[in-house]
Amino acid sequence: MGTLQSLQRQVLSLIGRAVVKSIDAASKCQTVDVELVGGQPKSGIEHFEPYGFTSRANAGAEALVLFPDADRSHGIAVAVADRRYRLKGLKTGEVALHDDQGQSVTLTRNGIVVDGGGKIITFKNAPKARFEMDIESTGQIKDLCDSSGRTMAEMRITYNGHKHKENGNITDIPDTKMEA
Image 1 (cartoon, one colour):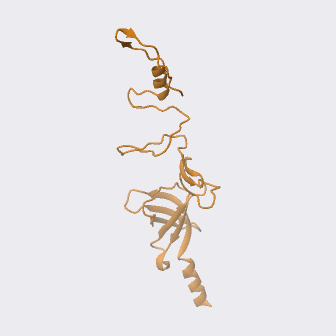
Image 2 (tube, helix red, strand yellow; image 1 turned 90 degrees about the horizontal axis):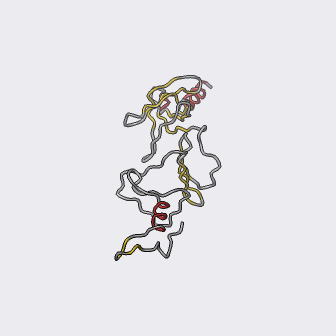
Image 3 (cartoon, one colour; image 1 turned 90 degrees about the vertical axis):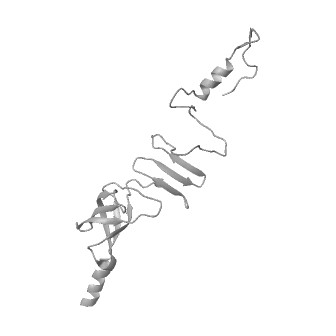
């Protein structure tokens, strides 16, 4: 019976649940300091992340830690999750990227939904953004927004009231007004 119990202990030592205490995101492979179930602290555990994706969880997140050969001196965190901020209610097949501030990108059954969580959404380092569809906005659209730009509503007002001097006469306002 002693051999079976020894084998059972060794198998149970391969995997551990833990609570994240802190994260070092500066190194090539992010490391986490955790507290295993039972209060055992472990520091400098490598956190293997999927290619093309990285995140830095908050303290209090949960981790699944593997210990190859049941050697508790060198663990590997293969998953870090935080149920406090997980998006709930996704439909079968839907996918989401989210954080603890309410920002998210959700691939829904009806299309992609980007939620800025009340913060600015910025597109960077691209020569242009190309939209191959109609664009609708419930807010204002402004060009040259960092300098002397105008909103489309301001441009419409200017166009609709526009008169100018031509051949010595002042023209009438346009016959066809630009509609909102």
